[in-house]
Image 1: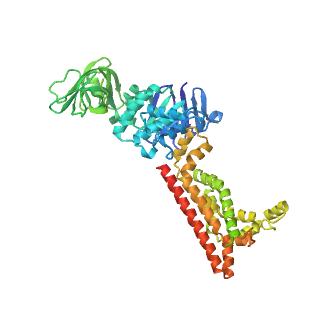
Image 2: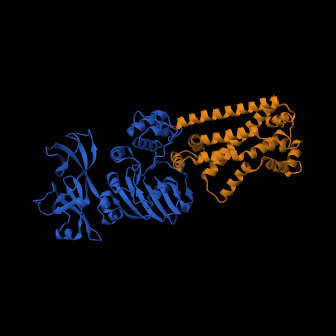
Image 3: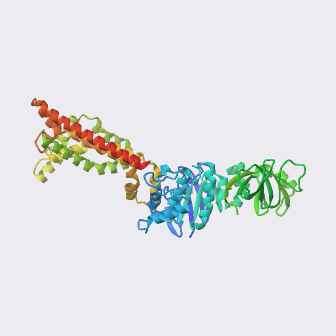
Length: 362
Length: 222
């Protein structure tokens, strides 16, 4: 029932990759632009044929260069959300969705409205794409991709064409939508943080090759993979709730590990937030620090230590129910005797609100 | 007013458009989407009738389809009359001469359809034919329609080729443009004037109708 992909090519870009995605699993193909991740997605969809490749889904072979099998894109049951959505400009939102349905589908209009409601776009079925905002267009594109009842869902940088605030909302919607998705899902992105938020597993692609593959937590704490993506990208995200707006302009939040103080967050008490803590903004101490200007200190336990080949190390910590990442030097990691199970304190130099679920109280 | 000539011209223009509509769609789409060796040569040949003097074109047509040519000889053996100086011959010449007018704007129309939109159509499960009908044609329609209007108007006014290929046989090859020339030669300025004015009116109506349809398509897209 899984999607299996193997691709090898010399041109136009060198490519040597293989991976497998289980039903219901979301795999992120992460890499810089030009790394070949989109080419892999196009190979799955049938929009590109590498010199040597094999793509199979649920045992159906879509592409096998060795056996000279190459199904045309319209014969592959695939749902694709394109980077700029590629909605049909002359059709309404509903017709865009209907266009992707089986022609014998009973009551297509009702099905289109059901799908548009599923992606949080009720009531706009009769609008043309030009009359919709970027975020709304993306939702139509997702509904259209699902309308085919695809065996595989492919998302090609689907969040890159909208502004940051909209992107945060769309992340939440995709996370909620995943409960309804039983097929393998492949997300192509250059944004490590996005992959961390959405993916179960990650495949890091560099110059057409897989340099790291594993669960999101594994890849995110792997110095080799992180070097590919840039250390600045790495950040832990954890949920918190606003408990008080204090008089000196700070907002107090509760995370599972303890209280956090942020400069005024304009949202009512009870609002649920996601907090982003970049790995390079976390300092570790074996004893509870005193006389420090840092406001946010959380007790934590080391769960994983990754010493890189260079002077750096990534420490994964459990703080309450959540995971933190700290980027420190290799020398400090050894001097502090950090090893799984060791208790320490995480001093947070910077904490930012990554996302607000307004009205999400309770 | 030479009604016979006018109807003959309209009939010729109508048939030319009817034959070239599918040609313009298929050839225009092919040239817009496919890359192949010698594409530039093909495009140059398609452009040729646009720059050749119609009399030169007509001369070669006469040579190619006259009773001494293989095509002309075959036609005469099969149908019992020669191809040139008949409506069929005229139609053949008209179709060939209008290929540039029919294919070029259609090609531009299809080129305006983004690759991503066509890929999306395929990924929505649309066969190439369904994609052409539901997605590409509605988007390329302004170009295809321009092609057909140009072909129609151009055929209506064509003079040189028709004189070379068709002569001036009433009801068979004597089109409105030839008839106007005849009237002028016969010093019937009034008759030529009425027919010329009629052609102007038909052209205006055609262009107005095109603009109205284009505007409607434009509204459909926005």
